[in-house]
Amino acid sequence: MDTGTKRSQRDYTLTFKLSVVDQVEKGELSYKEAQRRYGIQGRSTVLVWLRKHGRQDWSQGASIRSQRIRPMDEPTLPLTPEQRIKELEEQLALATQKAQFFEAVVDVLKNDYGVSVGKKATRQVVAQTQTLSVSRACQFMGISRQAYYKRNRVYRARADQDQQLITFVEKVRARQPCIGTRKLHSMMHEQREQQELHVGRDRLFAVLRESRQLVRRKRAYHKTTHSHHRFRRHPNLLKPSPEQIVATGPEQVWVADITYLPTRDGVAYLSLVTDVFSRKIVGYHVHESLHTNSVVQAFRMALKRRRSVQKLVHHSDRGAQYCSALYQEMHAKHGITCSMTDGYDCYQNALAERVNGILKTEFLIHRPADFAQATQMVREAVTIYNQERPHLSLKYKTPDAVHRALG
Image (cartoon, rainbow, N blue to C red):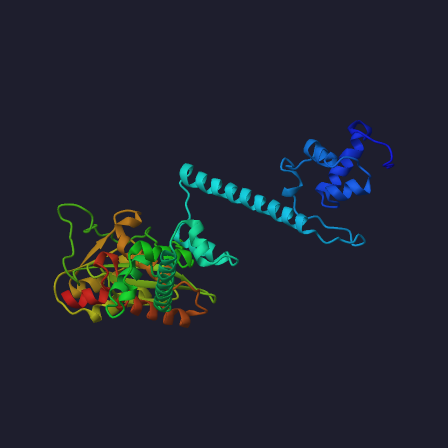
C-alpha cells in the first residue's frame, strides 16, 4: 500500500483487517512486522484490529503474546538498552500476572473444593522445578525446607518398606499363588524378627493394590454329583436341629466331596475327605473316572491316618459313590455314622465345597498337562494347604497345627 497518503480505519477493508489479524495470531508476523509490510499507518492500528477481531485476548497489548517467528530473510536489529529494559519490564509484568493467576487458582481449589497439595505431590512439584532452589520452592508452597526434607526421608523409608512387603508377598506366593491379603497380613505379623513387615491390614491392601497384586477370584462350575439312583440315602446329621452333631475336636466329623479337575490331556477328578474341626484334608485321591473304587481311595487314606477311636460321622452329598454298597461297607466295618445332604442345596456340604474351591482357585490355577502331572500338583497343594496356609476360621492357624494340638 502507498504510505504517502494519510489513511484512517475506514480506508482498510474488513477482509484486509481479518487477513492481517489471522497472520498475526498464527505467528506468521508480529504486529509491528505486519504494520511495516503492509504500510499500515498508526502505531496502534493493528492492535486495535487484534482487540476487535482477534480470537485471542489482546487486552494487554502485544506484551502477552509469545515471541513470533521472524522470517529468515529479515535481519534482526539489536535492541537498545531502553528497548531491552522495556522488554524485561513487560516480561516481569507477564510473570507477575501469571503468578497471581495461579495463586488464585490454588486458593479456589483449596478453599472452595477442598483440594490441596499433599505430601507426595509436594515432593513431586519440588523435584520438577529444576530452575528453582529447594528453599525458594518451599517458600512458594508455604512449607519449611526442614519439613520438605523430613517428608523426603519418610517417603523413602515408606518406599523401602513397601518393597520389602512386596518381596515377602512374592516369596509366599511362589508356593501359594493366590493366597489372600488378610492371610498374608497374619503371616507377616508372625515374622517377629522382621519388625518392618508389621503394617496394618489397610496399608497392605493399598500396597498390593498399587502394585496390582490383589487376587481376583475365578469361579467355575462342573457337576459331578449323580443323586438319582436306587441306593439308600441317609439323614443329614449336621443340619440345625435338636439332634445336630457339632464337632468339638478333630476326628469327630469328616466331610467328603468330589471335584472336577481338567487337564490338557483329558479329564481327572479329585476326591477329598476333610476334618470339620481342624479343616485338615485327611484323605485325597486323584482318579480318571467316577467309579466307586476310585472315590473310596480317599476315604481309605483318611482311615489309615486316623489316630483316635472316638465316634466319627462321615458327611457327604447324595452321590451314587457315597451311597454305594462298597462305601457303606467301609462305614460299617469301622463303626462310622453316615450323614448325607437331604436335598440339592450345596450349602449343606459347604465346608467340603469350600475346600474344593481353595485348592482350585489358590493352588491348581494352571491346567496340568496329563494325569501324572495332576496327581503331583494335588499332592503339593494338599501339603501346602495343610501345613502352611493359615485359615481364617482357625484364627489364622494352619489346619495341621490345630489337628496336632487338639488331636
